[in-house]
Amino acid sequence: MTNIVVLIKQVPDTNSERKLNADFTLDRDIDPVICEINERAVEEALQIKEANGGEVTILTVGPEKATDAIRKALSMGADKAVHIQDDQMAGSDTVQTAWVLARALGTIEGVELVIAGNEASDGRVGAVPAIIAEYLELPQLTHLRKLTVEGDKLTGERETDEGIFGLEATLPAIVSVTEKINEPRFPSFKGIMAAKKKEIQVLSLADIGVEAGEVGQANAGSTVLSSTPKPPKAAGEKVVDEGDGGVKLAEFLVGQKII
Image (cartoon, rainbow, N blue to C red; front, side, top):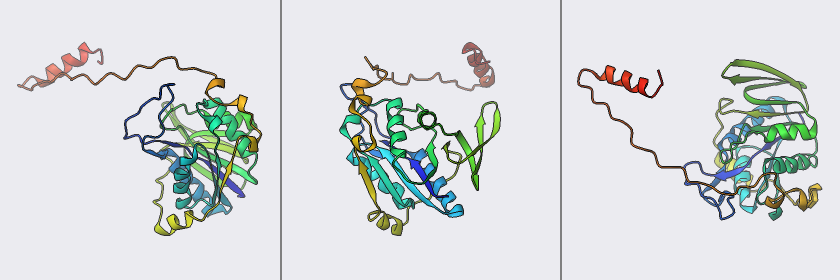
């Protein structure tokens, strides 16, 4: 294995309040952290590296503060990182972001495998890995709960409501993983200190051959015109068991057309 690239994203902490800016874009300054599923993608890459050799490169698109998410991945054991940092990316949609990532991957030497999370916790679109695969004309194994690399062959398991499906592909390829893939390691003190010295290559859109007219909110394929706050939770119906709790519960479920 030559080079495994892991796609990561800095997102607002899922335990924090979500807010929108005046232009209906997400306020990303609220408790920014590395997306949890990305930590599992990094862990999977590190395990493959430990078994097959090579190196792990982190790739992200984001503002300067996204460096914190990069350092977290580097402290886990990744070798280096590429940070696409350009103010013209603000407000870009999924397709635009995937295009930028695809172009950025073309600047990284020796890429054999790209690993991403199945979806980010901020938008939950879950399409970026597949769109990149289409742009680069590479095989894709998405939503994996298990991944095995043997030589140039990939095998994986995808779990759906219909059952578990086995998938295969040959390198180079792109995969996305779910929360069932592994348990990410905690960065050691040694890893945290080492991450401060690891290389982070900062590139602009011009550096990867992307023009301003291809990205940004003004050029996005969709526009948000309004938003409505999620209504507060309504109080539920309390059932007091006076010897007939089972009957009352059954009547409630029938009334809700659950049974």
